[in-house]
Image (cartoon, rainbow, N blue to C red):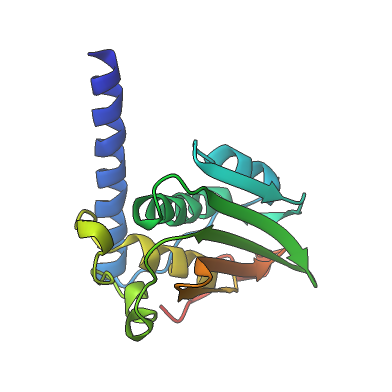
Length: 184
């Protein structure tokens, strides 16, 4: 009974966050950032759940911890949901040229090439693989807004041969972007 209460509370928390994200998207507000210093490798370890393999180099920097956490949780949740059951999801953190690159990779049915851009639009989802229809279609647009608010970007590659990889690429120091307008 306690496990059911905890699980239901967690689901309500996710639904509430999704609803708040919808309100922010619909109002046109920019994503508020609270930039603090932390190590992205530590965050990767914190968000990893069973079934996720973490390969994270230490990358200290300045980002909004809460929004980066939620973006990674969204990407990991999708990777777990749409990936091949039994195959691990890979979460990788690397620094390259003053930027941190965080990738989430899974094997499974690829996202159709014609939908690789539209999945980042609010309320849009790729044709659901394996009958998955749950979700509001705000997780990937939120992840894009987080990346852009930090002065970066998010891209996706997806194929039968190589699986699906979402890559967030942001500067190691996002302080200059706190409060700046975004393209979203």
